[in-house]
Image 1 (cartoon, rainbow, N blue to C red):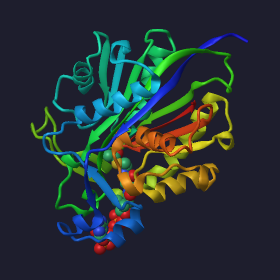
Image 2 (image 1 turned 60 degrees about the horizontal axis):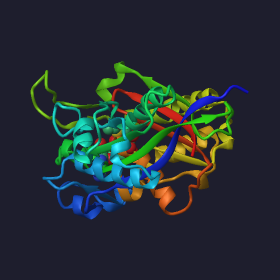
Image 3 (image 1 turned 120 degrees about the vertical axis):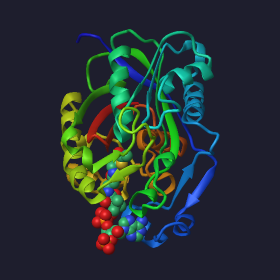
Length: 326
Ligand code: ACO
């Protein structure tokens, strides 16, 4: 069997800002209730970054923890890819700010903007460097301050999102070219720009010069989510050469408990294999998958060598799935 280079996750980190906002807190500012939010979404609380806490600070903390878990130092990092839709500044890329704050040497650093699909896009993109031997130690981060994009008078969106960051260290390791190899085994990425109106931010540099607010036709997004994500999961599984039933853990983007369960059911994954953090974190967009992975590792459920299936869907619309062995 020919040897192949794989992008292996050697460390995982996560970070949540200190302030917790409960559903009851939100019910004091918009016409909603804990009961409605829990029943429709599964969300009980979310974390909110402080005003002087930019997204790069969250990313740096998550990255530090991932590097520590991998036994690597900032000096080792030669590639940083940050999935974010809430950058510190219009430019430079948040990845370069993370590079400076961590003290990483000159290397490659850029952001990937695929909203809630940011982490699966970033991971697949980094694989293009690591599995070709162009990076020896990559940081892939999903970091968001989604609360900065909220219209706090819109109960249909402001109850759904939270802030946080998750990160993984990716390193090249030789594999046998089989599904027993550690590393990213397959992925499928999708985008459909005709669905922009379902989920977008109504501001931007070259339109109105504003940051804008998140606008969403939630029930329409919901309708697309289960069908589209399921297709991408089967495509990623085929790319990896695995059967979805072989997966040890399903780590979905944490948008809504009903979507998580709907997708798991449609693709035939048992409920007990689903890692869900939506109750505690809400939707942290690109951060939600690495945060859920971090939680699953911290609480001892996820173990090295296990087969993981990640998926996400977000603004664009974008969506996708990745299969990796830890
Ligand atoms: N509290 C109380 N009532 C509410 C709230 C709230 N927070 N929000 C909406 N409602 C009301 C609506 O006004 C509506 O009332 P009406 O019937 O009197 O008009 C009613 O609840 C039903 O509204 P729907 O939008 O049809 O409710 P639905 O069951 O679809 O739940 C939700 C809404 C939770 C947003 C759901 O559609 C959803 O989760 N959608 C997907 C979100 C998602 O996955 N986004 C993708 C990722 S995000 C990203 O990429 C940035």
